[in-house]
Amino acid sequence: MIRMFTTNIVRELTELGGSWKMLQLSEKDEVVKEYMAVIPSCWESMRGLENFRGHCKYSRAVQTKAGNYRLIFNGVSHTANVYFDGVHIGYHYGAYTPFDIVLPNVSQGEHILEVVADNRFSEGSTLHIPNDYRSWGGITRPVVLEKISDAFIRYIHVTTKQTDAGWDADIEIAVNNVSAKDNTLNAKVTIEGQTVEFDKITFTDGVCKLNATLSFEKVEAWCQENPALYMARAELICDGKVIDDLNERFGFREVKVVGRDILVNGRAIYIKGFNRHEEFGVLGNAVPENAMAMDLDIIASTGANLVRTSHYPNDERFLDLCDERGFFVWEESHARQIYAKKMSHPNFKVQAGACIDEMIINHYNHPSIIMWGLLNECESYTDIGRDAHVFHYDRIKSLDKSRPVTAAANKFFKDICHDLPDILSFNVYPQWYYDHEPVDFVNRLEEYARQQKDIDRPILISEFGAAAIYGYRAFSAVKYSEDRQADILKSLIETFYGMDNVSGMIIWMFADGRVDNTFVDWNSRPKTQNNKGVVDIYRRPKMSYYTVSDLFNKMANYVDEKENKK
Image (cartoon, rainbow, N blue to C red; front, side, top):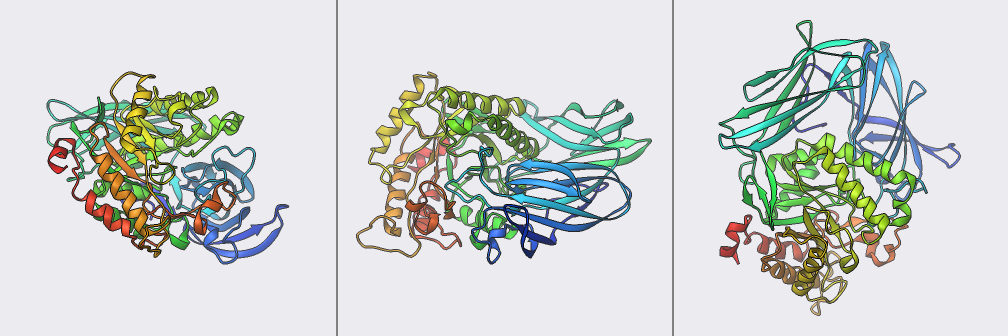
């Protein structure tokens, strides 16, 4: 499945799943072994490749009619080189964002599509580095082949705003010309029975953007209790015939930051969330839809209302499910603990900028996404680090001014970037990594941040937690026991909930996840896993799952209800 709804009626789509031939390659590009891989998947789930870090060549035949085509790869980890009939047609860096390749004037018949996926670390890789989560290998998200006309709709973006009469929807559509000749077209967008028709456009190449606003009096707002979704349908028309279309789903939802409050549709929310890695048991990060749904079922049962996509953009199908179920999402551009050497590399801004662009352009319409995140625990105390943070904030704001932006920070009293975010977010681990008294520590962090920008801003505890090995119980509640983890989470949740200057908390983490074998701290991770999940890697509950569920389900979802819940 590509999305959780039908995106096109006129445009022909073929999902290129199923079996592909996969060749494991040596450092010298010689064939080591041949496999049959079912796509999407990661090769670490295949016998004999559990710890393989290298590159593999995938290939399959595709049948086409004569005409223009577009290939969409929703995720290849982490570097892809794409070939069509032996000709190199595209390159992409980054495992967690989609990319597309347009193929004009394809002949009718059978063609060979090849993808060389590479998950090796290198000097030129500034985001994919040995880390506290696994960097997988393979074609890990769906691949789509689209038959397109001489022009196609690249995206629809809908930005909704509350008005005295109801809602306004600002619409932007981007149209790509594929042919080398001028194209003269009409375009229209329909939402909830209202249609806007754009003036006839003529363009030769590149992207043409069209903008309009529609007003609505009787639509339902998207919120946790009622995640109402609407469809925006765009059509391209040439000589009276619809030659292309695109359906995009969105919600009437507005996010603002006012003082210490995060407002959704004018009401201050209280965040109770989980950090979640995109990984499931032996499947790695090629997570099927039913497993995504299972995760959200479990998270919902705890009373949580937000998922943070630590530390990279997630599969769009997961975001679709969050839209449908009324979950809030903090979606994060890819970066965790990137230090000065990588930040000063010439590739850093190129690779980080491309990730931001692809994340926001492709995920813009999801009402569940209420904030963008960036540069988790990165070097925010040096001039190089500040330059990187300014770059990220500016890049995100240039693409989307409708959502607040934040960064999960842990450089504490030497951070020089606290003036930049709309929301202050702190990763703190009292009772696990250090013995700070949590209330005093958070208050001092806020005071330090206000020295850089003396205004009220919401504070989120973006990470806190403790590790436990599933099944390890101890009366003495020693480290790595389920008992100790449950005790620490209970103490911290009650403490943070009692603080009037804290707008929410996000537990590290939902489920245990594997770390890279070459990660500098891997030997402090029993089983080569980060074991701070309230469920294990197979979603078996630990004691802390029940502890968190008992607490979160009693806590308010909105600030105006909080006093009655304490």
